[in-house]
Image 1 (cartoon, helix red, strand yellow):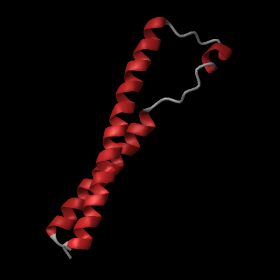
Image 2 (cartoon, one colour; image 1 turned 30 degrees about the vertical axis):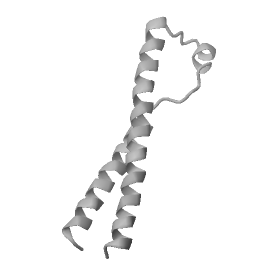
Image 3 (cartoon, rainbow, N blue to C red; image 1 turned 45 degrees about the vertical axis):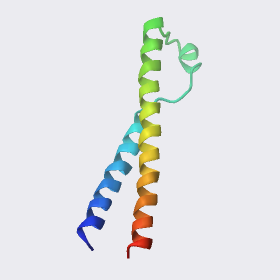
Image 4 (cartoon, rainbow, N blue to C red; image 1 turned 60 degrees about the horizontal axis):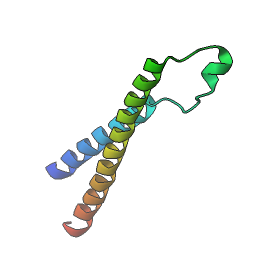
Length: 82
């Protein structure tokens, strides 16, 4: 194993852990569940949840695209330069 392969592996591992954490931090889309159980959402809590959800959704997309580009780059490196 060369140093470049180790570096690519570490970066890929970081992306994998990051995308897992960001996906797990997102809330489910069960909007009516709070009304059934008696938990009322206020206007401010709804907007706060939307901004956090939007932030996490945006970062999920960014990390996922970076992950796929990295995987394709690693495979191209292994195929063409080896």
